[in-house]
Image 1: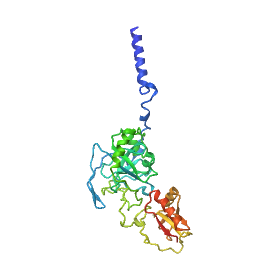
Image 2 (image 1 turned 180 degrees about the vertical axis):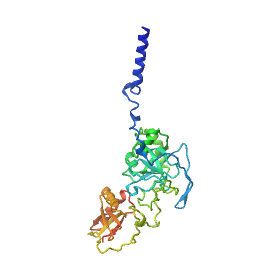
Image 3 (image 1 turned 90 degrees about the vertical axis):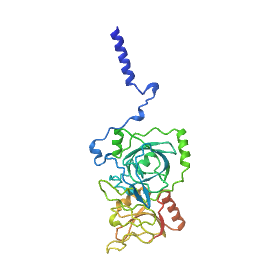
Length: 343
């Protein structure tokens, strides 16, 4: 009988352990389930070691000093950067993947793992920081398009967020190194959101970022410049030509394109009718231009030599319609879009 009693207790204890987290019908482990850890081949070339802090660096006359802040927890504004920078070298030498769950920060070590919470809804995700930026003093962090989309702020130019440094387990780290998303965190409760929103209200409201970039840093094992894939130069900076852009954005001055407009004997400029167009961006690579045009519902027009591919709305018959097109581009975050005369 004693043996039977002990056996019964053991079976009961085993059953209780097996059902741990399901008492009262609530599975406390449901939010902690993780996808299978990726294999080593999935993360080739992307590593968390060695962690790079880096030396102080200067951008646009301001010096930034990277540091390992053990209890980093700040509120501020987030923006995001996407397909127009795909393949650029991030500040720690990795290639920027706009669909991955990553971010740029001015001073935290590379990489650093943070939880980013949007203060509008309380939604929280785990993000891997592998780049430097944003270099606009009114913004705290630049998210990849994939991270912004997962957080639900990809349709916004900027959004109020909380950024908190965390130390996730290796399985979650490995998932983010592949560019995939880790399990979503539990939403931040309203009581804490109220406090965070009050802290955010004390800061200047951030401006919608300009989505044009300087020449990408050359791909290298380690990028020591401090300027990563998300670098956005101050207005009036040196224009970038297609000669060293490898398909990235071209910054064109009004009336002065940065690439020669000489026409080849057989090439003809794309015909366009109407009085006005809205130019959103210019590329030295047609595929990049086509990708943006599909994304925002615009058209691609080439120069005569097929060196520049411009993404445009229009043509418009009158100035008022063109202004409406300009407002559409600016609403999508392209503040450098401008109205031009057709032809």
